[in-house]
Amino acid sequence: MNKTIQKISFIAILAAFLCVLSPWSIPIGDIPVTLATFALYLIGGLTKKFDGGLVVLVYIFIGIIGIPVFSSFRGGIGVVLGATGGYIIGYLPAVIIISFLTCINKKQFFWYPLSMVLGTIICYFVGTIWYMFQTENSLAYALTVCVVPFIIFDIIKIIVASIVAYIINVKTTLFSSIYSGINKNM
Image 1 (tube, one colour):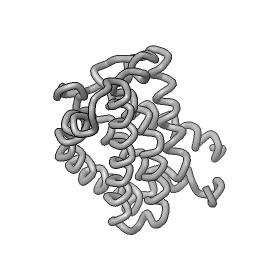
Image 2 (cartoon, rainbow, N blue to C red):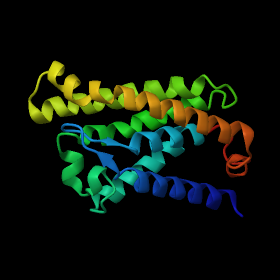
Image 3 (cartoon, rainbow, N blue to C red):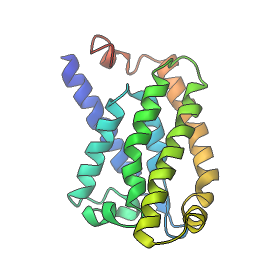
């Protein structure tokens, strides 16, 4: 199969994976705990550089046009422009950072949790600033509502996603054929 078609198919499959996991949520205050960040961590750990960003752009587009792929099975531009939409926007720089850092050496485990922690910090930053402006709340309130309750869940997701991505990248050749021969500098 043509390498470009393989790569496009891979991106589409990962976008579908993100779309399937993201709507499932457990409500905790204003922002629910979702599997979106778990999917995001895996996508970042499995893709090369900007491919993870393409996956997230596809996901955001699908949600903006109204398909209920965001938390709690919601969709539409209003979700992205709403108080918690900054976290969805934050997925983009987060997954790009994760992809870039894990590409440094996919065979060294420590790059996985390190990149995922940094990606989470970026997502928290973008989402929290957005939340503050949308709700006109203080930084302390935004951190209390939007970050602190989720830290333990994100730590668990990072540990599991790091292990899974590492095993897939190092112990299998599942995705190596997709990237072999395609813009090795990407």
